[in-house]
Structure formats: C-alpha cells, structure tokens
Amino acid sequence: MINRPDMTEVALCSLVEIDVEHGCLVWLLLGTEFTRTENYYGVLNKRRNISTPRSCQPTTHPASAQNTRPGNMRLIATGRALRAGSGRWSIGPSARGRRGLPLLRQQQPHAAVGLRFSSSSPASQTQKEKIESPRTTAGSPRRFSTRPGNQIIVEGRPYATDEWMNTPDTILSHVSRRLYLDENHPLAITRKLIESQFPGPVFGNYVEEDPIVTTEQNFDVLGFPPDHPGRSRTDTYYINEKTLLRTHTSAHQSAYFRRINSNEKIRPEEEGYTVTADVYRRDSIDRSHYPVFHQMEGARLWKRPRVDPLKHAAETASMIWKDVEKIPSHDVVVEDPNPTIHPERNPLQADHHSAEEVEAVAAHLKRSLERMVVKIFSEAAKAAKGSDAGQEPLKVRWVEAYFPFTSPSWELEVFWQGDWLEILGCGIIKQDLLINSDVPDRIGWAFGVGLERIAMLLFNIPDIRLFWSRDERFLSQFTAGKITRFEPFSKHPACYKDVAFWLRSATSSGGSAAGGVVPFHENDIMEIVRDVAGDLVEDVKLVDEFTHPKTGRKSLCYRINYRSLERTLTNKEVNELHEKVREKLVEKTGVELR
Image (tube, rainbow, N blue to C red; front, side, top):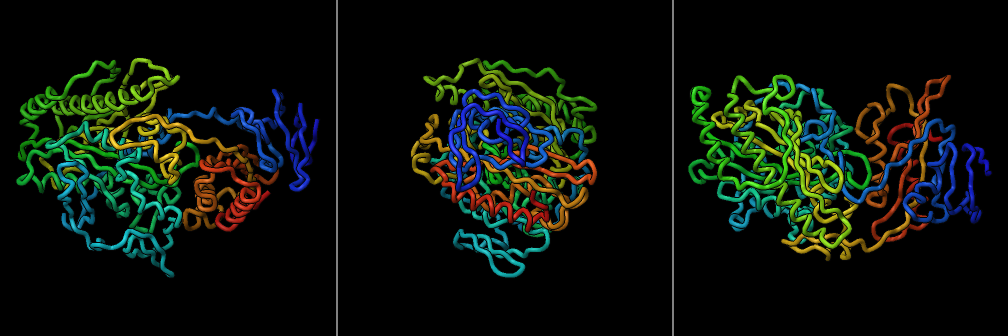
C-alpha cells in the first residue's frame, strides 16, 4: 500500500520506478483492484490497454469526495454524440418543451440579406449566383488577421468588436479551411452523397462560405426566444452584440426561401434546396465534439392559393401526394408508432395548415429522408464488408421532437451496430417563418443533419479531430466518389493531467472566457484548453466535484487527456501546455487553483 499526502490510499501490485525528476510514482497496472481513487493515475490506460509514459500520470484532486468512472471509448459516433445544441436542429433533450415566441420580420430588403449563394451542384458549377453584400470584397484574399483596437479583420473584411467578443484566433483560423469543398475530403464526399438524393431540377444544391451572420439571421427570424440558451456567450461565438459565427445552417433558411420565390419565373421547377456550411459552437472536448463542424440543411416547398389557402387544402394535399408517389420506395423496416399530429406533443399549426395538408407533407418528408438514410447506410455496409463490423439488417424509426422553426417535428434514428443513432432533425416549416420570408403562399418541410456524424459512420473515423488533419497518411486514404474505411496509421500514448480549482463564489466567477462577468461555465475551461493546446487534447472530463461543508465553496477537478493524432508528445511540452492552461484559468475565470 502506498500513501500520498494529497490523495486517498491506493493499492498497487507492481511498482516499476520512481520518477525523481518530477517527484511522482510511475507503475504498470497488472489486474490491480483499486480503492476509492481508482480513476486516478494509470487505471484509464489500463482500460485502453496502453501504458502510461513517464511523468504523464495525472495529478490528483485533493479532498476528493466523489469520483466518476470514464465511459467506454467507442470508435464510432453513437447516441447523442455530435448532437446539435438546444433548438438548433437539436436531438438533445434540453430543447423539448420549450415554446418559441412569434417570429420577427426581417427589416432589410432582399438584396441586403448579406449572403453569398454558391451552387455546388454540377450543373451550376460554372455559373455561381450571388446576392451581393456590402461586406463582400471581390477578389479579396481568404485570410484571417487581427487589427489592434476594437476591430478584427476576417478574410479581408473588418468587423467592429465590443464586450460580446469571445471568438479566439484559434477558432477564426478555421474559417478559410472549407473542408466541404475539397472533393477528396471525407466531408465533401459525404456532402456529395447526400446531395445525390436531392437532385435537380427540383432541388438546387448550394454551399455557404461566409460563416459570419447577424443575430437576426441566426436567432430572431427563426423564432428563438430572447432567453434561449443558444444565444448565450457560453454557447455561441460572438464578434459583437449583433454579429456572430453562425451556429447552424438555418441562419440562411429565410434567404433561401426568398430565393425560391425570386426564381419563380427563371427557374420555376426549383422548389427545394440543400445548403452546406461550417458552423461554430462552444462545446465540450472529446472524440465526437469539435467547436467547428459542418451541417447540411434541406427544404422542399409547394405553392398554395394565396387567398384562403385552407379552403383549397384538399387540392393542395392531392398535389403533394402525387409528388410522394414519385419517390422510389425501399424495403427497410420503419418504426413510426406516433400520429403525425398530436395536440400537445406535436401540434398542428391550425391557423395556417389543415391536417390533410400536413399528412401529405409529412409523408413526402419522411419518405425522402428515409431514402437518403438507406443510401448512406447501404454505402456504409458495403465499405464495412470484410471487417468485423456486424451486418445486421438496417432499421429506422421516427421520434417526436421539438424545434423552434418547425411543427410538427421529428428526429430520425437508425439502428446501427447495436445502437439507435440519432441522425437528423426535421419537420413542417413554421408558417410564420415563410410569411416573414415573403413566401406566404407556400407550405413545406425542412431538415438538418451533421456531416461529421454521417462521415464518422461511413468511413469509420474514430476521432473528429482527424477531419482537420493535414497529415497525408489520413488524407491519402480518401478519393472523391468512393466510400472506404479509415485505416488507423498510428496510436500514440495518452498523457493525463488534472487541474483542480475553487470557484470564486456560488454566483459569479468574475471575467469569464465567454466575455463579461458571468457565472463559470464548463465551456470556459474547454475554450481555454483549446486555445492553449489546440488539437493536442483528445478530451477533457469533469472527474470530481467537492463542496466544502463549512464555507460552501465549490471545487471542481477536470482531467485533460493530452494525445496527438500524429506523434508522441514529450513530457516537457505536455507539462508546459498544462502550466499554461492553469495560468489561463486563473487569468480568464478568476478561479483559485488547488
């Protein structure tokens, strides 16, 4: 038995050496049973079947009162991994039950929306259409730089900053990457595969390259209430109070509805679209979450009589059912036990829609998305042949959901390799949004899906950080138009370090990394770790919480897993990175280190 003054008793079966330089014990674990501190030191590595490098043992949290077991490391994005934030095509539980406020009409004219529409469909590659914006500088280099004072420059365009600014250079540096446009990148291959299920001339396939939007575009016009958590600086990257990095592709939804309306004479057959873009959210650090990821959104609209559309509901529904019949059928088992409309859980927009119209639109939506999912997972199954992955029959189910901009709403789940995976969110578009987008005489559906989630399944990519790798050992494995399983080229050792600290008080932690004086939020430490160590950190987990019984002060302990995807980290650089993290924590959040 070995006792240390800053931890509880630990039972060891094989002591290997003493690291004199760093003053800590290093050992190999050989089937050891641990007591109350089993999560400390090498037990995590034992579960991953790797040995811990010298001086890379985690430091410990004094006065540990409660330890949590780390979850099993999965090599595939499952469950609620990569889930969207509340209300933003959310598939998490926090959005359920929220009630959206009436939508706000955009005040700017159509030509001043400030979006660039770049078609990614083959038929339109040579004739990219634009809605010009005052911010767009033709021919400007796509670079990020900062300028002293209350201003930043992103790809040649200046933006004023204020106390809301919480976007670090490490995040802005991703803007110019545009992985979804590199035809040999797994995200671009995934984009093309999904686009193939929404072909022209009915659908136009587009990309949105500029991620900087207004709060009106990102929240207001979509019906996000003022107190929605997605608006918080702990969740969203702001440049100033009215400008941010989009948190979802839905920020462009209204403009695309207007596009369909304006194209009615020159391209009347185009009544739907898909749009792909990079989106940005402050989030946790692990193998399935990254602050920059990619979404695809799609929608399909039908015209209705402008005057008294409900009186002509039967005619509209009949027209939509004819389009439903044109969609090829599939032989996959689909579970859909709930009614299309439920007065409490999934209400009809009774002031605008009839039940028969919604039944028809919902049928078109579900069959279209089922067809897309069947295509995706059929390709994944082909790529998995010859591997040890199970080949169970594909099953699909529909689950009731809530989103601020659709009603009724659903999530689509797929049973894959023993788990139900939440793939996308969708629903019948709120009519207020269509009215505010100058298409009051339309009815339709919309969906949103995360490309990383689909690509991780398709290519068997175990870590979301790999998508941003410039390592040719990763990039050379993928070719446009082909689905191939990723072959790991190395596995480097993990290095665990703990950081424990007291929060300043129960109400405020001072100047937060989110900007301004706000309570401490877990995303603050995530952002600090990302800013210091970038992609050299695999995950950050809360391993202990402790409240002092006399003072009521709260202490937290986070475990940081330093592990590069491309090389073995040295003790020296990990220690230096960790010390910078500790310093930044004090500087940015005002915590007291333990």
